Length: 529
Image 1 (cartoon, rainbow, N blue to C red):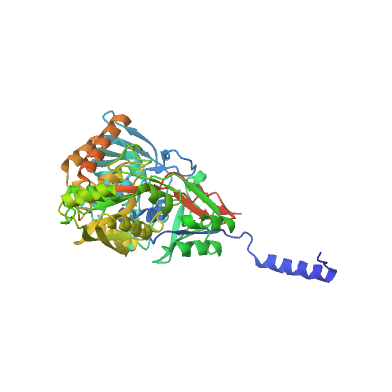
Image 2 (cartoon, one colour):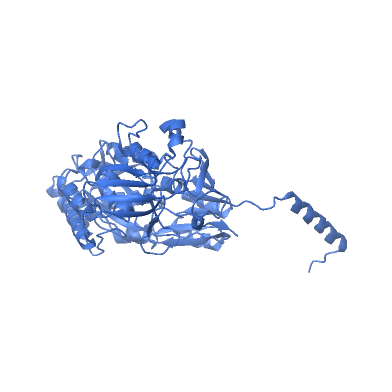
């Protein structure tokens, strides 16, 4: 037992008073979040990747929002944001938004229908002074049915579509390949399109503070935020892109960061033993395998079928993600519309795959290259995935080299299309909408647009996806997507191999961190005890 003398008590008291006097009246709370890759552009109309949208959605807002504050397994509810309400015409082609009054951008510019039109012009009108040239390609999944839009009055704005779109509101709430979110018109006029990268000014719960490319993005509480239910609990959020999973984990254990995305499945028990909290939940994410239909080796559908049959998905999900994943087949993802867990586009059959290769004229197999990314949101050990697939393919005679790229470089390459000599590539995708299919399988997404990067052309799919968007019921929508799935499976232009849960680890004092079944997170409720 330690004995405290009077002198010791006096010294402790004086020291305590001195320390107390030196502290500010209220310590600020800073949350440091380490995610799986660095961020792309901060301009929502030109941004890419889920990790980037994790930042963008806290600075910028759109007409509507997904409520990610409640967590759980249900698809997040669509809630009002910069629009308080909306009316949909009887034919489903017109959306009239009543805009929220009294909201200003972070620079004091008022939010109103003219600001909405400015942003719509910027995203969709090539004749507009501040048009973003990359926006139509990136945002085609939102505005491909766009017929027009207009200011009705100061706080009423209408968007007209060429046909009904059953997912239009949910697509307005999403992001990752572009984001239909509102930028301060005055900021654009002042800084120009390129200057928005360094001055991203929206209406969201956080204001931009600074960005050090390759190191961090810092955002701070917007004290004038219009929504008291989402007023941030932390003063400051620092977001860091740290691709190396071991570095993320060590940073968490050292107390340098408070939250990390996607720890290695092998490290979960160690992190918990160190006091970390593991937060996991369902996600619509799965891993798609693009096959280069222009490559001489893969132009024959039998070769593409052999690739599908060579993959041991059950073991891959079990051992690569240690149970935090399930095997998948085909082009529809768990958590997305039309998904059927019983569907198979092939069966695991290495001997049958060898026979197909021989039929296609490759009895001794061949050599190819796999272009891979170290990954972004919710990705971990993607090189291990590539090596697993490399081993499975080698068993049937397809000998492949692997080239790895950082996430932003990889997606630039995907936009340009798979390069000559590359037969296979992969990335995580899948959404709670089927919007991503418009970016992957359609002819409008062929290079130089994102991301039909294997040059697959089937105009029938464009029509089916258009009909799916116009569906009057979930059953009709699912039926159209099943047609898409079956055509893609027959042509074997794409397959998939597993779907992973979202997994985060937090420090022991972090509170308020929840996961909804989505690729992005809401950090407004996060703080530290």
